[in-house]
Amino acid sequence: MQRPSIKEIDAILSETPMERLQITCMYYKQDEREGVKKVVEKHEKRLLLFRKELERMDTMMIYERKYAEYNVIAGIDEAGRGPLAGPVVAAAVILPKNRPILYLNDSKQLSAKKREELYDVIMKEAVSVGVGMAGEQKIDEINILQATYEAMREAVSKLDPQPDITLNDAVTIPDLTMRQVPIIQGDAKSASIAAASIIAKVTRDRLMIEYDRQYPEYGFASHKGYGSQSHMEAIKKYGPCPIHRKTFIQGILNHESP
Image 1 (cartoon, rainbow, N blue to C red):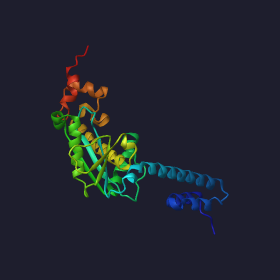
Image 2: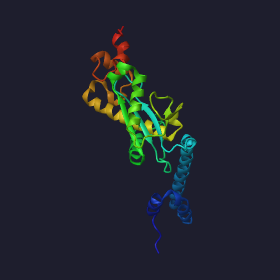
Image 3: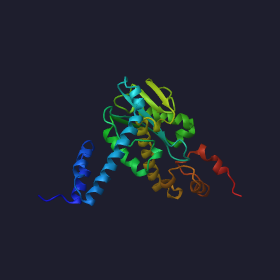
Image 4: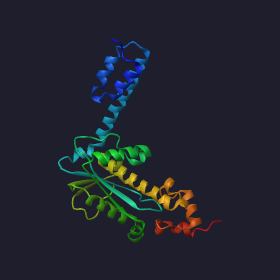
């Protein structure tokens, strides 16, 4: 019987479920071909990284385990408190209890490509996802902190089922009836908050890319409304556009170039 080629073995190992990969690697280790040995080593390294990720995600579930007596746990986070333009976006996510989503992390620690990939996974596998927004006019009217709270309340209101407890990134949200647990740097410590941070960040980034098409002179697609040098120079040159936060750019507009 003809032995499978190195390419075929690589394909077999690539398609083998992680729970069976170690046994399959051990089987092909008996093959004396150098090419096969290298392929097996590659997949053993992949398995090691996978196990390390499982360990990391286990630590990311510490708060979810701590409050496991609550039936429905939601993580809450926001994106866009600091920019000069565009809305603040909040997300609330209820993750499945017994099916962890790997690679969740603080959205700022992930590449844009990884955030997009995880966004799709979260939207598919989460029990429920809610998104809320407060636009630039609301931010100017009631200030960024109160606008953030408003967006967070809206996000929670869209969850089905409603949570019994929320894990929040650092804040306690006024006027929510369920128990809240504020966690400093929660997006790096709780899987639920990390998932919310990814949903909020991707939602807002996509919106700012759309705004870039409407107002191309400001470069929103690149800086997403934050106060980069190029963005501030564009504000000085063209003045504000409808999505700029007036209370955030007064100093820029009043600045006189030497």
